[in-house]
Length: 570
Image (tube, rainbow, N blue to C red; front, side, top):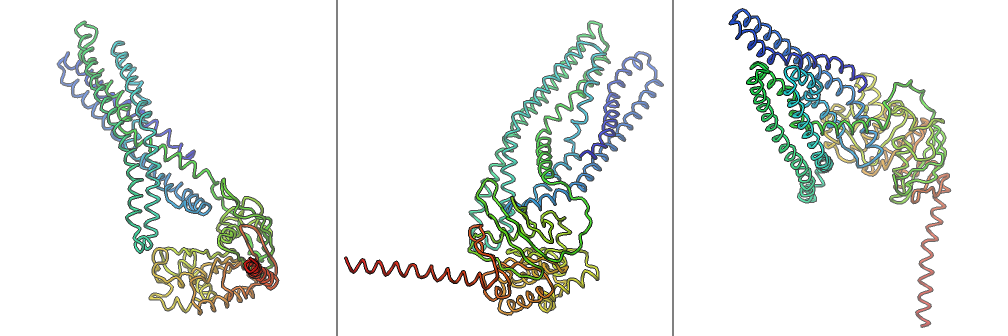
């Protein structure tokens, strides 16, 4: 926005020229009354008309240039801020699950449209109203005071509009945002909605939010329209009052008929921005609220600066007392610490809601821990630039999210498909054991998979997601339930992949409950309610878990025997 302020000075000069040339009509009429009608000179009328026409043509040219300048500023803002806002939205959505929406981009569109709409003209023209009022004062003080008092009343009506519409518009904006989010979630989960007959309840819930937004907007529009009608009627009455006062002054020989009419025109021009501002107040308030939200979002994180790429890490990984807590809630993770050497594979196990997926997100740098550090070759993973980190860290999330595009584009993480990139795509697919599967698709690597990989089965999506995680030969890999959708053949291919990765020196963390995969790991970390329960070599941890299981199964048996004895004695 500081850079955009460079356009302020040209806008001020163009607006000044336009508003000064707005005096053309009043002065033309004044000169016709004073000079042409008095002298009956046709030459004077022609010259005055030519001068007025030139002034109006110049004013039209200035308005065109001002409009183009505003459109350029709006386009520049969109090009400059859209990547920043999309990045901030992605980072915010990654760190706050369930907050997925593109409201920031809609807000940016609203601000940009405000710059290119007539709603901004009252703001640009209002500072020049004193010029017109001053010209009226020069014609006659009484006329000037009448116009000034009328301007104060109209300005008070504008403030009243702000006071009466601020709260309902804010409530409507919040309800509209909730309605947008609910609609996005309903469309995103269309299959579940249709299969389970959830559309009508969701539609009723969405309609309630939409109705609340409509009520707020309607309430604000009704109040604004009432005040706008009052302002318009008052301005017309004021113009009539100026004409009446001017006629009185003409009868008293204190003013000429030209002054009477010119003062009426000037007063209408002086008060027009205030009246227009009342009519466009809703758009102005909406743009201001959108701008505040953009400032809040874009200010959460500094804009990424170019960084030098770091060399490929060897794969040594350390977790130092990692802590993660919800905002204002209970801790999710507490005191997680472990070490892995290059080429080691670790299984991350535990009951549901133990914090496994949350820990995976912290280890890959998606979430920033509230305490402790996750270090890859001694450097905190979360501090790496995202693109640099992406070259060395692979991640297969529990919910495989593929994007609309081809198979090759998804595996390449949407990098430009040059021959070198495509070779790496094939290498990753072969390493993931999915090359033959892809060749069997209708167009091979050029097959369009649809939004979210809708054209693929669950197992195909999972294996292509694995190839995407392996793209670029990462030094550190986290796989969250990589075999949840795989058949026996897919599991065998995955086991082969894990063995190959370990041989290549890739450090690997697996989250899985199937023993066929856990046999390939070197170490096991057991989580329980967000805390580290056990960590060590695989055999040691599994033996310890087996001993605990035997103790747990024996306890109920002893209790049952004791109860049986008590029953017999009774």
